[in-house]
View 1 (tube, one colour):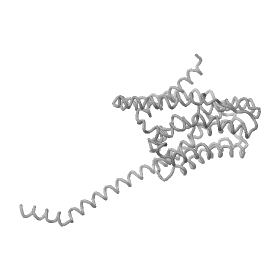
View 2 (cartoon, rainbow, N blue to C red):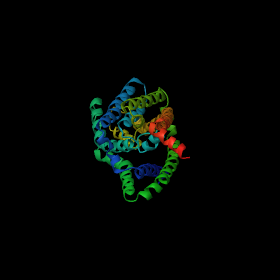
View 3 (tube, rainbow, N blue to C red):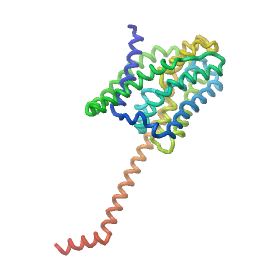
View 4 (cartoon, rainbow, N blue to C red):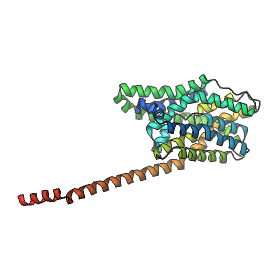
Length: 327
């Protein structure tokens, strides 16, 4: 086994354990959350799988980007949400049940959506683009659905074990992810340097900001669902994106060099996008703290008003008077 295979195996293991930790804290009903909220489901699909791909197509046509960057950005836009979504949305105080439901539904829907979207893109480019549904299902099944369901089953039958194991599993997943990503970035850096320029960074940052804005808008009035959909719209599954980019390889409209550089473009877009979304995460955390303080202040005022009302009522006055007379 080569060092490259070890790194990829570690990366897959980290994503598996990351989602397993989420499942250890979740309930089975969380997986079907969006089925009970059809309006939010429709808005989520439109935000992630209609508006965002259209924005990426616009950027691909409007910017003089390297063909590999165009392939990478389109592949990301067609992919489901990544396994690390729950960790990022927890930083933004996002709705936990919605996060699990979105993770589940996009994984399931991507089995049909990704091949359909590639076929549609092939029609527009007058070329043959095809990715078998079972390939997508295996990817999202092993990286999202299997660990999520496993964690939920463990919690159902051994809740105490699940509570104790969730945090350590999450920490282990994060450590493995860092150890796997560092050599991956170092190895891909020479290729990523080729892609930087001609507005590449500007395009990625712009798409990240637009994705956050679109998701925030479509998330509805609840700030906890807005933050989840914003991050989900701007961030996608890297393994599925790289697989989609490879599926474009037979196309005669894409140069061979673009196919070789496409995985590096996906990695570059993920890194720059993650950095560009930091201000949004900080802002949502600040807003969550403000809401929490406002709610606590309101509750304290209501309690004070209730006490004052009780003391000023006739019953409270007579009871106080009887206490003085008795003494």
